[in-house]
Image (cartoon, rainbow, N blue to C red; front, side):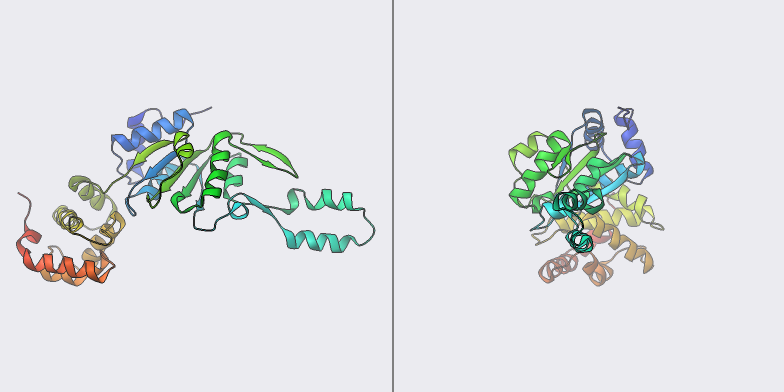
Length: 296
Protein backbone atom coordinates (compact mmCIF):
# COMPACT_ATOMS: atom_id res chain seq x y z
CA UNK A 1 0.00 0.00 0.00
CA UNK A 2 1.44 3.36 -1.05
CA UNK A 3 1.43 6.11 1.53
CA UNK A 4 0.23 9.63 0.88
CA UNK A 5 2.70 11.49 3.08
CA UNK A 6 6.43 11.06 3.70
CA UNK A 7 6.44 12.53 7.20
CA UNK A 8 4.66 15.03 9.45
CA UNK A 9 6.54 17.96 7.94
CA UNK A 10 5.33 17.03 4.46
CA UNK A 11 1.73 17.08 5.72
CA UNK A 12 2.17 20.67 6.94
CA UNK A 13 3.89 21.72 3.72
CA UNK A 14 1.29 20.18 1.43
CA UNK A 15 -1.64 21.56 3.42
CA UNK A 16 -0.02 25.01 3.44
CA UNK A 17 0.02 24.86 -0.36
CA UNK A 18 -3.77 24.46 -0.16
CA UNK A 19 -3.84 27.43 2.27
CA UNK A 20 -4.68 25.29 5.26
CA UNK A 21 -2.34 26.20 8.11
CA UNK A 22 -1.95 23.01 10.14
CA UNK A 23 -0.03 22.89 13.40
CA UNK A 24 2.08 19.91 14.51
CA UNK A 25 -0.86 18.26 16.25
CA UNK A 26 -3.13 18.35 13.20
CA UNK A 27 -0.37 17.29 10.81
CA UNK A 28 0.70 14.47 13.13
CA UNK A 29 -2.78 12.93 13.31
CA UNK A 30 -3.26 13.14 9.53
CA UNK A 31 0.13 11.45 9.03
CA UNK A 32 -0.74 8.66 11.49
CA UNK A 33 -4.16 8.11 9.89
CA UNK A 34 -2.42 7.58 6.57
CA UNK A 35 0.20 5.21 7.99
CA UNK A 36 -2.09 3.24 10.31
CA UNK A 37 -5.09 3.14 7.98
CA UNK A 38 -7.41 4.41 10.70
CA UNK A 39 -10.28 6.92 10.51
CA UNK A 40 -10.03 10.27 12.29
CA UNK A 41 -12.73 11.76 14.50
CA UNK A 42 -12.27 15.52 14.20
CA UNK A 43 -14.18 17.27 16.99
CA UNK A 44 -14.54 20.91 17.93
CA UNK A 45 -16.79 23.97 17.77
CA UNK A 46 -18.63 24.66 14.54
CA UNK A 47 -16.64 26.65 12.03
CA UNK A 48 -13.12 25.83 13.22
CA UNK A 49 -11.99 24.19 9.97
CA UNK A 50 -12.84 20.52 10.53
CA UNK A 51 -14.55 19.98 7.18
CA UNK A 52 -12.04 22.22 5.44
CA UNK A 53 -9.23 20.00 6.73
CA UNK A 54 -10.76 16.94 5.07
CA UNK A 55 -11.31 18.83 1.82
CA UNK A 56 -7.73 20.10 1.77
CA UNK A 57 -6.28 16.65 2.52
CA UNK A 58 -8.29 15.29 -0.41
CA UNK A 59 -7.03 18.10 -2.62
CA UNK A 60 -3.33 17.71 -1.81
CA UNK A 61 -3.39 13.91 -2.08
CA UNK A 62 -5.33 13.90 -5.34
CA UNK A 63 -8.16 11.91 -3.74
CA UNK A 64 -11.76 12.11 -4.84
CA UNK A 65 -13.86 13.50 -2.00
CA UNK A 66 -16.95 11.47 -1.11
CA UNK A 67 -19.12 13.29 1.42
CA UNK A 68 -21.87 11.90 3.62
CA UNK A 69 -23.70 14.81 5.24
CA UNK A 70 -25.32 13.51 8.40
CA UNK A 71 -28.70 14.58 9.75
CA UNK A 72 -31.37 13.26 12.06
CA UNK A 73 -33.28 10.49 10.32
CA UNK A 74 -30.46 9.48 7.96
CA UNK A 75 -30.82 5.75 7.42
CA UNK A 76 -29.16 2.92 5.54
CA UNK A 77 -30.97 3.68 2.28
CA UNK A 78 -29.43 7.17 2.13
CA UNK A 79 -26.05 6.33 3.66
CA UNK A 80 -25.22 2.92 2.18
CA UNK A 81 -27.44 1.73 -0.68
CA UNK A 82 -30.99 1.07 -1.77
CA UNK A 83 -32.71 -0.62 -4.67
CA UNK A 84 -34.31 1.36 -7.48
CA UNK A 85 -37.84 0.18 -6.77
CA UNK A 86 -39.47 2.13 -9.61
CA UNK A 87 -37.10 0.64 -12.15
CA UNK A 88 -37.59 -2.82 -10.65
CA UNK A 89 -41.37 -2.45 -10.95
CA UNK A 90 -41.08 -1.40 -14.57
CA UNK A 91 -38.90 -4.43 -15.27
CA UNK A 92 -41.45 -6.74 -13.66
CA UNK A 93 -44.28 -5.19 -15.65
CA UNK A 94 -42.31 -5.38 -18.89
CA UNK A 95 -41.53 -9.06 -18.40
CA UNK A 96 -45.21 -10.01 -18.51
CA UNK A 97 -45.92 -13.71 -18.10
CA UNK A 98 -43.02 -14.86 -20.28
CA UNK A 99 -40.40 -15.09 -17.51
CA UNK A 100 -40.40 -17.12 -14.32
CA UNK A 101 -40.09 -15.34 -10.98
CA UNK A 102 -36.60 -16.69 -10.23
CA UNK A 103 -35.30 -15.27 -13.50
CA UNK A 104 -36.93 -11.90 -12.83
CA UNK A 105 -35.65 -11.84 -9.26
CA UNK A 106 -32.06 -12.46 -10.39
CA UNK A 107 -32.44 -9.64 -12.87
CA UNK A 108 -34.00 -6.96 -10.67
CA UNK A 109 -31.54 -7.55 -7.82
CA UNK A 110 -28.50 -7.03 -10.02
CA UNK A 111 -26.04 -4.13 -10.29
CA UNK A 112 -28.26 -2.40 -12.83
CA UNK A 113 -30.89 -1.70 -10.16
CA UNK A 114 -28.56 -0.81 -7.28
CA UNK A 115 -28.44 2.83 -6.13
CA UNK A 116 -25.05 3.41 -4.50
CA UNK A 117 -24.84 5.87 -1.61
CA UNK A 118 -21.67 7.49 -0.16
CA UNK A 119 -20.55 4.70 2.19
CA UNK A 120 -20.82 1.98 -0.43
CA UNK A 121 -19.32 4.28 -3.06
CA UNK A 122 -16.24 4.76 -0.87
CA UNK A 123 -15.91 1.03 -0.22
CA UNK A 124 -16.19 0.11 -3.91
CA UNK A 125 -13.98 2.89 -5.26
CA UNK A 126 -10.99 1.75 -7.28
CA UNK A 127 -9.45 5.22 -7.45
CA UNK A 128 -8.02 7.05 -4.42
CA UNK A 129 -10.84 8.51 -2.33
CA UNK A 130 -11.35 10.34 0.94
CA UNK A 131 -14.60 9.68 2.79
CA UNK A 132 -15.92 12.62 4.77
CA UNK A 133 -18.69 11.77 7.25
CA UNK A 134 -19.72 15.29 8.19
CA UNK A 135 -21.41 16.07 11.53
CA UNK A 136 -21.46 12.45 12.63
CA UNK A 137 -22.84 13.52 16.02
CA UNK A 138 -26.19 14.17 14.32
CA UNK A 139 -26.61 10.49 13.44
CA UNK A 140 -29.00 8.33 15.38
CA UNK A 141 -27.52 5.43 17.33
CA UNK A 142 -28.71 2.79 14.84
CA UNK A 143 -27.03 4.51 11.89
CA UNK A 144 -23.86 5.06 13.91
CA UNK A 145 -23.80 1.29 14.50
CA UNK A 146 -23.97 0.75 10.73
CA UNK A 147 -21.07 3.15 10.25
CA UNK A 148 -19.09 1.32 12.95
CA UNK A 149 -19.60 -2.01 11.20
CA UNK A 150 -18.34 -0.66 7.89
CA UNK A 151 -15.30 1.09 9.37
CA UNK A 152 -14.33 -2.02 11.32
CA UNK A 153 -13.79 -4.23 8.27
CA UNK A 154 -14.09 -1.83 5.31
CA UNK A 155 -16.62 -4.16 3.78
CA UNK A 156 -20.38 -4.41 3.54
CA UNK A 157 -22.74 -7.30 2.98
CA UNK A 158 -25.53 -6.90 0.42
CA UNK A 159 -27.77 -9.96 0.81
CA UNK A 160 -28.69 -10.13 -2.87
CA UNK A 161 -25.14 -9.58 -4.17
CA UNK A 162 -22.82 -10.85 -1.43
CA UNK A 163 -19.98 -9.15 0.42
CA UNK A 164 -18.33 -6.09 -1.08
CA UNK A 165 -14.84 -5.48 0.30
CA UNK A 166 -12.69 -2.41 -0.21
CA UNK A 167 -9.82 -2.82 -2.66
CA UNK A 168 -7.99 -0.08 -0.76
CA UNK A 169 -8.41 1.54 2.64
CA UNK A 170 -9.68 5.09 2.11
CA UNK A 171 -8.79 7.99 4.34
CA UNK A 172 -11.86 8.62 6.51
CA UNK A 173 -12.68 11.83 8.38
CA UNK A 174 -15.63 11.98 10.77
CA UNK A 175 -16.38 15.51 11.94
CA UNK A 176 -18.34 16.28 15.09
CA UNK A 177 -19.55 19.49 16.73
CA UNK A 178 -19.86 17.54 19.99
CA UNK A 179 -23.61 17.97 20.28
CA UNK A 180 -23.71 14.46 21.73
CA UNK A 181 -21.22 11.83 22.85
CA UNK A 182 -20.18 9.32 20.22
CA UNK A 183 -20.12 5.67 21.19
CA UNK A 184 -17.02 4.25 22.86
CA UNK A 185 -16.89 1.53 20.20
CA UNK A 186 -16.64 4.09 17.42
CA UNK A 187 -14.02 6.10 19.28
CA UNK A 188 -11.87 3.00 19.84
CA UNK A 189 -11.58 2.41 16.11
CA UNK A 190 -10.57 5.97 15.30
CA UNK A 191 -7.81 8.44 15.95
CA UNK A 192 -8.99 11.58 17.73
CA UNK A 193 -8.28 15.21 16.90
CA UNK A 194 -9.75 18.24 18.62
CA UNK A 195 -9.67 21.51 16.70
CA UNK A 196 -10.44 24.57 18.80
CA UNK A 197 -10.56 28.20 17.76
CA UNK A 198 -7.06 29.22 16.64
CA UNK A 199 -4.85 31.36 18.82
CA UNK A 200 -4.28 35.00 17.93
CA UNK A 201 -1.20 34.52 15.77
CA UNK A 202 -2.62 31.56 13.85
CA UNK A 203 -5.90 33.32 13.12
CA UNK A 204 -3.93 36.31 11.87
CA UNK A 205 -1.98 33.97 9.56
CA UNK A 206 -5.21 32.38 8.33
CA UNK A 207 -6.67 35.79 7.47
CA UNK A 208 -3.51 36.77 5.58
CA UNK A 209 -3.50 33.47 3.67
CA UNK A 210 -7.19 33.39 2.81
CA UNK A 211 -8.25 37.01 2.23
CA UNK A 212 -6.92 38.71 -0.91
CA UNK A 213 -6.00 42.36 -0.45
CA UNK A 214 -5.81 42.35 3.34
CA UNK A 215 -2.70 43.90 4.86
CA UNK A 216 -0.88 42.70 7.96
CA UNK A 217 -2.18 45.47 10.22
CA UNK A 218 -5.82 44.85 9.34
CA UNK A 219 -5.36 41.08 9.67
CA UNK A 220 -3.88 41.58 13.12
CA UNK A 221 -6.71 43.88 14.17
CA UNK A 222 -9.38 41.49 12.87
CA UNK A 223 -7.82 38.56 14.76
CA UNK A 224 -7.58 40.53 18.01
CA UNK A 225 -11.14 41.87 17.83
CA UNK A 226 -12.58 38.43 17.06
CA UNK A 227 -10.60 36.97 19.93
CA UNK A 228 -12.04 39.58 22.34
CA UNK A 229 -15.57 38.94 21.05
CA UNK A 230 -15.21 35.20 21.70
CA UNK A 231 -14.46 35.98 25.34
CA UNK A 232 -17.96 37.45 25.76
CA UNK A 233 -20.86 35.35 27.00
CA UNK A 234 -22.41 34.60 23.60
CA UNK A 235 -24.97 32.17 22.24
CA UNK A 236 -22.67 31.46 19.28
CA UNK A 237 -19.06 32.62 19.05
CA UNK A 238 -17.82 33.68 15.61
CA UNK A 239 -16.27 30.85 13.61
CA UNK A 240 -13.09 31.07 11.59
CA UNK A 241 -15.15 31.21 8.40
CA UNK A 242 -17.04 34.19 9.82
CA UNK A 243 -13.74 35.85 10.70
CA UNK A 244 -12.72 35.48 7.05
CA UNK A 245 -16.07 36.83 5.86
CA UNK A 246 -15.65 39.85 8.12
CA UNK A 247 -12.11 40.48 6.86
CA UNK A 248 -13.31 40.24 3.25
CA UNK A 249 -16.13 42.67 4.07
CA UNK A 250 -13.72 45.21 5.52
CA UNK A 251 -11.49 44.96 2.45
CA UNK A 252 -14.45 45.37 0.10
CA UNK A 253 -15.61 48.46 2.02
CA UNK A 254 -12.13 49.94 1.91
CA UNK A 255 -11.76 49.92 5.70
CA UNK A 256 -8.05 49.73 6.53
CA UNK A 257 -8.42 50.40 10.25
CA UNK A 258 -11.37 49.26 12.35
CA UNK A 259 -12.91 51.74 14.78
CA UNK A 260 -15.99 51.47 16.99
CA UNK A 261 -18.31 52.73 14.26
CA UNK A 262 -17.07 50.44 11.48
CA UNK A 263 -17.04 47.48 13.88
CA UNK A 264 -20.64 48.22 14.89
CA UNK A 265 -21.74 48.64 11.26
CA UNK A 266 -20.29 45.27 10.20
CA UNK A 267 -20.57 43.10 13.30
CA UNK A 268 -23.58 41.29 11.83
CA UNK A 269 -21.11 39.52 9.53
CA UNK A 270 -19.53 37.95 12.63
CA UNK A 271 -22.56 37.38 14.85
CA UNK A 272 -26.01 36.09 13.93
CA UNK A 273 -28.00 36.50 17.16
CA UNK A 274 -29.45 39.85 18.21
CA UNK A 275 -28.38 39.42 21.85
CA UNK A 276 -24.81 38.60 20.77
CA UNK A 277 -24.68 41.64 18.50
CA UNK A 278 -25.90 43.90 21.32
CA UNK A 279 -23.17 42.58 23.64
CA UNK A 280 -20.47 43.14 21.04
CA UNK A 281 -21.69 46.65 20.21
CA UNK A 282 -21.65 47.53 23.90
CA UNK A 283 -18.09 46.21 24.13
CA UNK A 284 -17.06 48.40 21.17
CA UNK A 285 -18.64 51.44 22.82
CA UNK A 286 -17.18 50.79 26.26
CA UNK A 287 -13.66 49.98 25.08
CA UNK A 288 -13.04 51.85 21.80
CA UNK A 289 -9.31 52.16 22.41
CA UNK A 290 -8.94 48.37 22.36
CA UNK A 291 -10.08 48.34 18.73
CA UNK A 292 -7.23 50.50 17.49
CA UNK A 293 -4.56 49.21 19.88
CA UNK A 294 -1.75 47.92 17.68
CA UNK A 295 -0.76 45.30 20.25
CA UNK A 296 2.67 46.78 20.89
